[in-house]
Length: 327
Ligand code: BTN
Image (tube, rainbow, N blue to C red; front, side, top):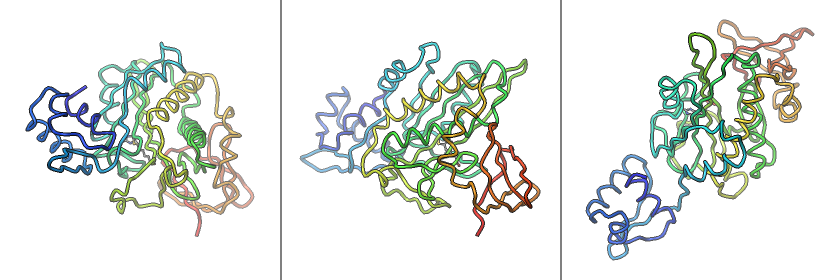
């Protein structure tokens, strides 16, 4: 553990800690403690109180992501041969970008990258994913397939379905799924998924599964988010154990990734249908070169979106397609 992470861990309880106490625990000087705290504040953007005679205190307690806790929970749920390498950053540009960089060095090794904050979180269609420090979950799982699974097209739907079920397990009453992979609650975005592929010469393919889950935005400046959003704390009124959620989510994901080579989306079709927010609605479907209007008729066993126009139903697979509710 780095000095800075250790320091943050000591302050995570939200109580006052004297400079002397922190310095002796880290075996550094009191001025080194102050310098590190200043650096942490600048790079992570949290609020810190420094009160003479009392010491330092975070404005709000935090739960840091913890590698050992994640590892233990993952080991309990999945075969250890599938266990990914785990990296946790206090701050990074994008966990997807980091995971892709690792993948370039070691394409066949599964890897899990998490961050407390992202400075350039990537969203779908070139959007930014606002990623303030400490309250939400930003994670990317890199996974290698020896052969491209035929059902790879439905992967993002698979992930969205698992994510929705996981969020319901922590108290969100009923998530809504909007094709291809938006997880919402009462029309507001709760989580987003971004898949990035990496092909290898000689067959096989690697995929980075990036997930951003709004757990607790903690009053951060959110005015740049260009769509209605909500966080889990707002829905359930409770704080979420981020380590537990991340570990269960990743474990369930790995279990399904091991199955996906043999199965198509039909194993999760009913789960999707139960949460499908578009089915039966008048929608507008935006394709790269045209815009279609029609009625959403759900999805098929391959995860394709079904659009009815003049009594005819057509399927759409492309990841670039976006769907908007008609006015
Ligand atoms: C969307 O626009 O709906 C997808 C958002 C995906 C955001 C996550 S956060 C973790 C991972 N790293 C990134 O840079 N993006 C994804």
